[in-house]
Image (cartoon, rainbow, N blue to C red):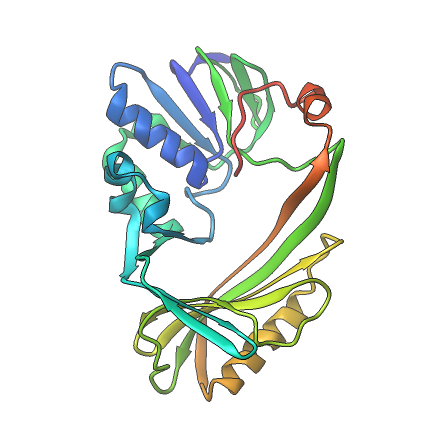
Length: 266
């Protein structure tokens, strides 16, 4: 059965798709918007962080309600060199993003729980067989195929650790490269969310997309040990494998069948 969905349908309720929906609601309220997410909630399982200087002052009202933690600066560490930088740093969680969407957008604008199986510039079809017709489709589900592109991968796993004692951090560590270098360039990233709670992420670059999660978990535990932290529990875990494009034929990529929808990174 065909349904008329909205003036604009946004496929993918991650950070990119959610920000488009929120901005359209704020700046073009006369348009009806439908945000479509295949999972049961928006945002997935993520912590996104950024420098305050990444967001222009005129766009801060869009992002500020999503921020759960704020710091006045951050640290970086390399072998023999450390530095504190005074650029404010911010973090967003998927839980806060999901809650804000439900606070701001009317429920008819939010569709979750059924994946999109096909889409064109003005229609999309869900896994349950329903087809929606709309004024325009924006595909924000992310790029999962990279024909004509060359490069590597950024791979990571992160855990929120609850510690038996305070960690002693008063700001994030955006890059700690004093760790053992394996495969490609590797560093650890830390976000202190409370005196006894810290998000620790092990990140490295590689020529292959495979992710060895047990090994990354062991590296996080080893890093905690080097900081004299005793882990009481792990309350959250997230992983990622992100393409890093170094070269390619971009015109051929966009002309590949399936890449003709208006599309944003995930």
